[in-house]
Image (cartoon, rainbow, N blue to C red; front, top):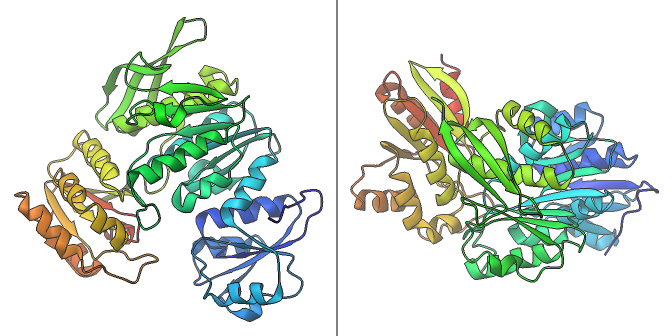
Amino acid sequence: MYQLDFNKPIHVYFSGIGGISMSGLARILRSKGFRVSGSDRAASSITDDLAADGIRVIIGQKKENITPDIDLVVFTAAIHPDNPEYIAVMENGIPYIGRSVLLGQIMRAYKNPVAISGTHGKTTTTSMISEIMMEAGTDPTLSIGGILDSIGGNVRIGQSDYFAAEACEYTNSFLDMYPGIGIILDIDADHLDFFKDLDDIRRSFRKFAQLIPEDGALIINTQIPDYEQICGSLACDVILYGPDSSADYWPEDITYDEYAHATYTLCSRGKDGTVSRQTISLSVPGEHNVYNSMAAVAAADRLGIDRAASAAALKKYVGTERRFQVLGTVNGFTVVDDYAHHPTEIEATLRTAKNFPHRELWCVFQSHTYTRTKALMDDFAKALTLADHIILAKIYPARETDTLGISSHTLAEKIEALGHPCLCLDTFEEIENYLLKNCRKNDLVITMGAGNINDVGHSLVSRQ
């Protein structure tokens, strides 16, 4: 495998540079003196920003983009062997690595690397840890899977030995990491177009845990069923967080304000058995964020960051784009956008919404990929019934071309079989018009999914 020498910068070409992670890695290499260029299938705000910063970006992927002066090509997971740039790289014998391999090699260059994994909550928890590191003045380098307003994007270039990054399980990319501190937030059945089943996923998380060196630490949620199978007999320290005092970190006295923001007492047990307590107040909603914040504080504690800095940072953190993001109001009803695309995430978001001021709750859901929709159909239907009104957009296919014989109407039938009405609408324009006609003052509308359903929310509030 090709190994980058950070003391000898070269020309690195990113095939798929417009991705949120790829663009961040491109910026990190550029900050270290590398010559960086790349391409993507279509222009976007990300490619525009890269070009504005002086990175050469080609729109459209073709063989002639691969020129002799390129020393290394980085491929995103979306690039397949039939891609013309991939073919050109193979024909010309140019060295290449995957995105996750590059992220791992960058991580290896830092003394204090934190890798945040889990089926849900990675972006939020990475953002929380990022805010804590910055509050503490550690000047970290950060790679986040979403847009964090406080750093003006998804990446921050620091000058210290502190590094935090998401570690995604899809295609086992997190197994290319070199974490000093690893976090496992949860393990759920997902990405079943790659993994065989939940047991297969759990095996991968076990392998991730085994990557952590003896002088490192694994932070893991005790709410993961049979979590001991994941963290048992590891050489590194294991730090548990969960709902009660059987863990090393647990919450007490959880209360919520009128916007579902939690305040709680964070309890933690030291190695000598003494329990310390810290009041934590969050500015993001939902019980799930209580647990995300506990994981973030546990990581900060391990890094020796003062607890007061952690509390102050968590109070300031108001969320990442597409994570229960309040977009605005129109006709007296509120519009929120959320990235939830798995039944567990949907349930967490809709339960959070129950504590948010509203009259009736509308969920506009766009399922992401046919594989996930078919595999988790019954769970999707059950989770969505937590909303008062459900509108389904067409399934977002992402990388898939086979419909597997299903559509959003198939999911609607499952929902209706549970005794809950559901409406399928084919276009975003139809969805917007229906909401404008039927939503009343003080209703809450959540556009939800990992595709482009957020366009509906932004379009709605632009009419205010």
